[in-house]
Amino acid sequence: MLFHAARRHECSDSLRYELLAAHVDPMLWTPDAVAWSWVKGGEWRELVAPYSTVIRV
Image 1 (cartoon, one colour):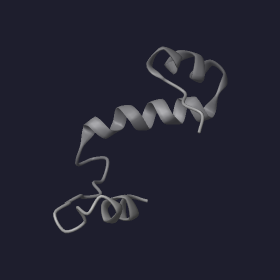
Image 2 (cartoon, rainbow, N blue to C red):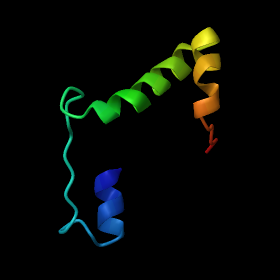
Image 3 (tube, rainbow, N blue to C red):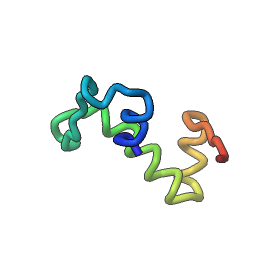
């Protein structure tokens, strides 16, 4: 999807992105933990609900 969006907005030649391993960028741990908790459900979902916004598409 990123590739298609970059082409659609005509920035695929200048766009640079990297896929980083979690240990390289600790700031990725937070959204991963929130997403995991949301999918896990139950008490975990309740704990992260204040930090989450659900957008139905």
